[in-house]
Amino acid sequence: MKKGKKLHVTKELPIYRIGITYTNSLDEYNRLVKLRGGQQVMNAGSTYQEVTETGQILILIGVFDKSVNTFAHECFHATMFVAYHLGLDVNLETHNEHLAYINGHLFEMFFDEFRSSQG
Image 1 (tube, helix red, strand yellow):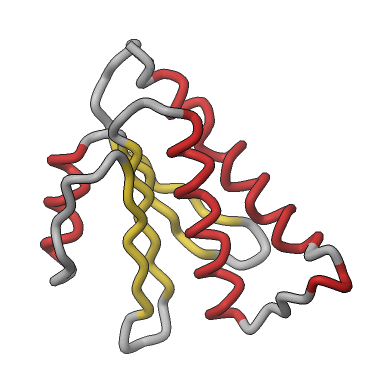
Image 2: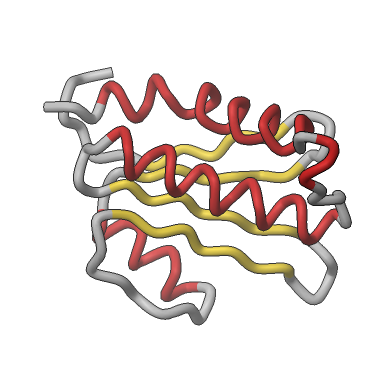
């Protein structure tokens, strides 16, 4: 993949079978969010989350400032949305390993696309 290329890619989060889309393009993010009736953004990054009438979970992660901090931040938002809508427990006494694994998996799942966008 060419460095600095604008893209969007959808992959499935294993086990939970949730399609998650990543984009590094603010224009593409806003186009996709507008199609769903969501609000457009002008931030360094954003995560759009929706549960459809049929119960399908939709997640769109956008990172526009090329910052690994923003990438990790948006992966965390997606992780918490998955946990909330699947009824996964958030409990300080258990160290929340399941959340850490989901977050790490999301980060790894899209890291090559994130890295390739670094111009």
